[in-house]
Length: 264
Image (cartoon, rainbow, N blue to C red):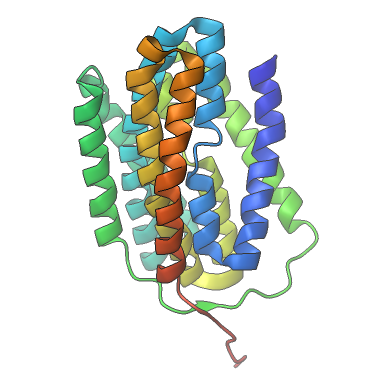
C-alpha cells in the first residue's frame, strides 16, 4: 500500500531531518522545515491517483483550512507553554485545533480563493500575537534515545491519525491530515532541551513557512482538475519553492540567539 509505506518512510525521515536541522541551525529552521508540504503533497498525489482529481482537489481545500486551525494551535500552544508548561501547552493546542476544525467545516464549500485569503489573515494574526522568544538556552548533549523517540512517536501518531481520517470524507480528512504532529514533537523536545525561547522559535518558524504551504494547496485546489496531476503539482512546487526561499531568510533573521547559561 503506497500511502502507508510513504508514512512509515517519510515521517521518521522528516522528523529526524527537522530535529538534526534544528540542532545545526536552530529550532526556528526546524519549525520552518516541518511547515513544508512534505506530507500533504505526497498524500494528495496518491489520493489523486487512487480516487481521482476531484476527490483530491476537495481534500486539499480541507487541508488549506486546516492551516487556519494550525494558526490557532500555535497560539494556544505558546500560551500554555508561557503560563503553565508543555503539558498544558499541548493540551490547549489540541483543543484549539479541534475547535477551529469544527468551526470551519460549514465554510469549506466557499471558493478556494476566499479561503486562501482567510488562511493568510489567520497566519498573519498568529505571527503578530505569538510571544517574542528572545535568547534561548544552548542545548546540552542529547541522550542517545532522543532522536529515535521523536521518530517513533511521530510516526505512530501520523499513521493513527491518517488511518481513520478518510472515513470522515474528503473535507474532514483534509483538515485532520494537517494536524501538526511534526511540530508538536519538535516543540516539546526543543522545550525540554532549550527552554521556552527555543520552543517559541519552532512555532514562529512554522508560521512563517506555512504561507508557502498555503500557496501550494491553493494551486492544487484550483489546478488539479483543469491541468491534471503532473502540471498542477509542477506549478504548485515552483510557486511554493519561491515563497519558501523568502520565508527562510525571514526565519533566519528573526531567530533568537543561543546562550550558555551559568549553573546556579
